[in-house]
Image (tube, rainbow, N blue to C red; front, side, top):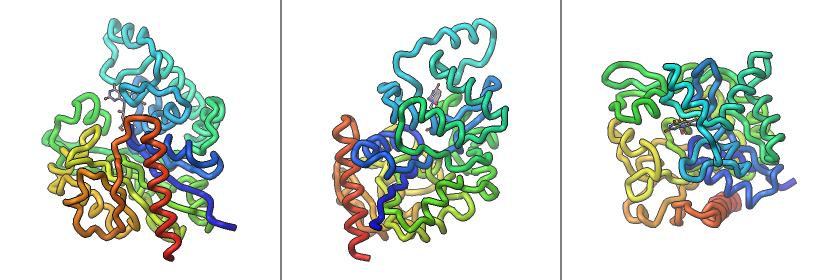
Length: 316
Ligand code: FO1
């Protein structure tokens, strides 16, 4: 039985782009996307899972192509009214998006797990690929700024990433159990590749890797681990990656991200803009166009990443 399952780790908008590319070049049953849940929070009495929802909307073709998060064709009546009533309007919930949060919250309160709810919602939205929250246990990314510890969405959305980041913490990660389907896949012996999508390594990928047993399971899978750099030309395509790296005293570069992943990486896909400075990272470097603006870009980068993994596997 040749190794046929691709396990992708994803968070945020950049990760979802590559996940879409992978979903278009692989049969649905050969792709499992692990969604970061460190960005989750309770807001307006609702359980919000932004990275799960971004993946869901992108894979269902329902995403807002401008923002990258939330749904297209949105209306904002709920937000208008919440403002009138003195409620919190800083975290924008469109009327269609709101239905997902309300329904998920209802089911969670009935005792369903986040992965059960996610699986049913993906099925109802016609998604064949498995979108699996990294854990059904609570993990929360927290940021220590000058004013002390704050919740992730407060940092990222309410304060628009302005606070200087002195430290990050993933509350609950050491106790959280990686979701069972993920661990079963990684222990199946059938994994073709583990792909780390071009997400912010700190806020989207590290919460996944911080869970006890996750790094070991990736190693035990025997699959080549290939990451796509989220930095192009020393800048993040979107979001605070470069700013955060500088504030955490790390080199805000493609090489800096590879160093952060350490010996986990076998392959690393780097943009042409960073080819010269990449030097000798511990992984085999492939130079490619990593900026994804078109659907074709997403598919091409997915193929490049899979080819890099297959080349590594053939040398094993
Ligand atoms: N990001 C923003 O910058 N502003 C928002 O108002 C906002 C609302 C929002 C609603 C639902 C959702 O699933 C995501 C949303 N995001 C918003 C994005 C979200 O904060 C980030 O995508 C992740 O948490 C980090 O990648």
